[in-house]
Image (cartoon, rainbow, N blue to C red):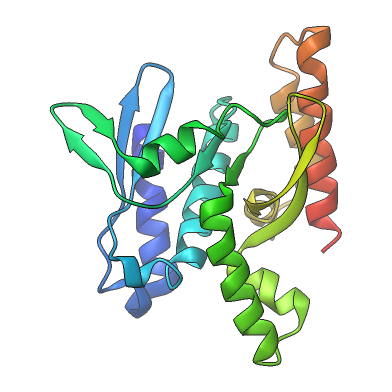
Length: 209
């Protein structure tokens, strides 16, 4: 799967070409059962890389599904320190405070990063772009994400369902059926079952456009 993750960065570069030439490529770190993605940018680049970041996270999520790995996590931005295998800093704390809060299989942006996504969305709308075009360019969905405490929160979510379905273009593949097949490989308790249902609800919502 490591090779597939590295290919996600290569696909990103080939898809966006010149737009990404000035940016550093993300790094992948593994800690126990966690995957940490580090993408170093300047403070001024954060809004410009949002579409690339969303595309990358969606690609990583799809790589996980195709390898029977179900990711749950959060994406933030800010300062961090990587020193002798330890990762510290405000960005890490922000992501850590959210990555286990959601009652589903999926990856969200934290509110801190989400405000920047909303800022870019507003700029696009002010510029006359239609909502569907805005979503396609941001590669994110603003969604009422279910939380473990029974509440929910409006958060930006990388549009992994569209990335999952792109695999089926030109092929005789039922993408939703494949998703059922992946989920069906796991033993699911009564407590965990709602996570799968909530994930499927998001998939259907995202596919409605």
